[in-house]
Length: 374
Image (cartoon, rainbow, N blue to C red; front, side):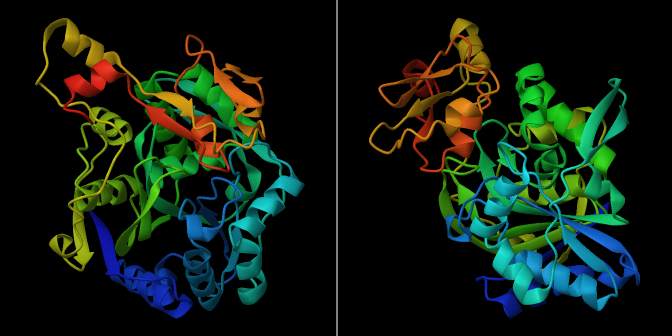
């Protein structure tokens, strides 16, 4: 079983976070076990969009600083590498770094931020198929990758963690092709697993000090969890976090499909006990109640998906949702998005990238009634 380290940390003061991250690394054998003098080390955060760290939708800069500082102490050279949602060009990337607090962090601790947009093809060979994907070249140019994810919900995948975070290894709008080609949630989950197994982070660290519940990954509510979690195995890390948040792994598309593919989700916890950090009231996106409704209504429930709905008094008409819709199913009517639900693939990129959190996910009334109102 893979070791998963858990360290308590209740706020984002730089030195407290540094000590919590160091505790996790030490529990895994010490960062110098992995990072040697002269190594180039990529740090892959979750910078979903240009949003303040106070929104808790992105990996907090104090967590990236803690990782980067310790890489430098080991004699390595850190580099923050990310492809946020939406367009992928230098101006937008720099704006995202600045909004997410990375630019100030970079200046304070001399931890560089990547602006090289080049990509490189990689061949995926899995038990499912063999195909080519395009990955950020700066990630693969480094000697190893530290995957620094954020603990939060996801309207499409239920939860986004270590495995989902490496979807950011795909450049910018190329991500849209995955949504179009894999509108089935299980297929998309398997694509995410494939990408993770190609890029292969050496270490996985999760910012769970303040997570996000509800309408994640960008429009949810902050949730104090108070942990940093780390492991060499991203699947085991996500498995632990599901147990911390009491999320049913059979309802979580990535872990359900990983298990079906024979990938172990087992773990051995080192550090504080699991029972000390369990959150019993963490709110996740809609999940059907299994085995309670049969027949035609049960079939409707099992095949149902939420839909995006705009809150018109919050919408500013920026058209980011329209410009980033993989299915091209959004038109602007009177300055507000209008959805063609017949064409909508329920990827929720619109909800994910809305800067005003003006798009929510909504379940049909019949499905809500059948599932006990959730």
